[in-house]
Image (cartoon, rainbow, N blue to C red; front, side, top):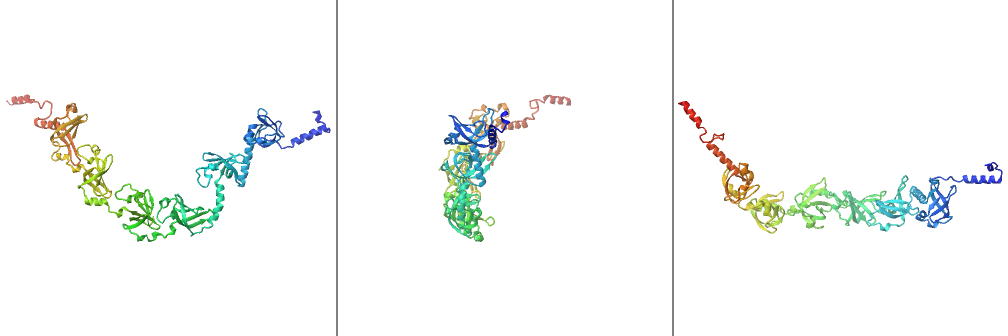
Amino acid sequence: MEIYKDLSTPASQEFEKLLNSQLSKASIEEGKIIEGKINKITEKFVFLFVEGLKSEPVLDINELKSLGLTDKIKVGETISVLLEKIEDKNGEILVSAIKAQKIKGWNKLVEAYEKNEPVIGKITSKCKGGCIVEHVDTGSLMFLPGSQISDKPLKDISHLMNEPQKFALIKLDKIRGNACVSRKEIISSFKKEDKAKIIEKYKIGDIIKGAEVKGYSSFGCFFNVNNELDVLVHLQEISYSRVNHPDEVFNIGEKHNLKVISVDKEKLQVGCSVKQLSPDPFEHIENYKLNKIYKAKVVKIMDFGAFCELEPGLTTLLHSSELSWTKKNITAKKMFKIGDEIDCIITEIDKDKRRVAISHRLTQENPYETFEKKYPVETIVEGEVVNKNEYSLFVKVKDLDIDAFLHCNDLTYLDNGEEELAKYKKGDKIKVKVLEIKVSDQKIRVGLRQTQLDPLDWFKDKKVNQIITVKIISTDNKGLTVRPEGCEMDFQIKKSQIAINAADARPSRFTGGERIDCAIAELNLDKRKVTLSIRLLEELAKKEALEKYGAEDSGKNLPFSSLSEDLKKKEDKD
């Protein structure tokens, strides 16, 4: 240390000068970007010289190649790096060229965002909710939401991929380091200037001719004017009549004249009206009367009916239920086409709701009223089977275009209704009896068995508890199938009604073909209910025996049971 005590020597003064010049340099800090000069290159690494560092930082040569800096891998070239650590656990200096570039790129984005300047980027890939955009100058990655790609929906964006273009920075998260950009805003900014010039041409009261229907919304309809401007016709400005949705009146691609009713130069919006091109028809709605026939023009066909015009601007609804008396689930599309003039009757006029309802079927004679006059209940008519389902037939009666309902239970008295139904097919001619007519409900019910003799008429002179003779047709575990002599209908005697004694109530006692007596347990011809019972017959016979031969006390019904008592009484008298 003695050499430094004497600062008057030339060597000491030179050492002091060098030391001061070194310490006067900017301090080296971790987390800052520094410049390093390449002074050595090996096969895998690049060695940098940075003034103020005690050793040379080392960079992986592949890191520089990935950044596109292959041309700068030369001795003497300067590289920007981020100083991550001055000394790690191994005593080495850690630097990163990639992180330095990202920080530089982020700083450029922050600067552009603060100055509200666009950046140049290219869409490199798609991701959930949008695309990834790479900043051309720095390689920083930014997010482009799907809604910000264009000012109109795009099904295919392949023509935009990897093409350098301008993007507006709309959001910057400095804490997380996220950037969000918009291409739509750039496009709209150019269009905004043009749109302002276009809107200058329109004034309130102007008539726009031949505007094309472009699209719908719940609040109105959008029209394209000369392929330069989109205008809105609000729902309330479509028609003087009530409109629930624009598609009730307009079709995409149609052309209509519009009247300009508002111009907003700040929002660059033009509002138009269709209904104001014609006088308000509700001012003279008193000219129209209920239940009177008028001509109406079909202007719109929907699934639920059709919209018709009684006069320009006065649109009315013709619901599908008012199209025809006889055709069920008919659609207006099958009956009319746009432009047809049809007869109609006004069924409702509501001035407050500005609604008019019409009916087409009321202009025609009600076939159900005609049927009721021509074929009242109990009339037998000839018909043709025109349809069939799993439980009924539909029968068209002669010259009237009406389908009458015939349930399978009304096909026959004797056999199972569903089995009988299987015997019929479309086109079969049958005679039926009219059972019920409901004009208001548009329903007619007919029956086939009602045209035949009713086997239950056999019981008209019979009564409950009467004994009849039946023939056993068949047996099963549930009981007996029997047919009364002289009757054509089979009846069931349940197993529980075969005998009083449970041991005797066995269907297997009978083989079929036997003639036996039984009693009528229940008889209700109105409800078509007849119950037969062998057990009841036994109970009736037992009751008759008890009434005839005495009470059912123990031993009292036996012969001479009271003989001893009678002899004793006689001795006492003597």
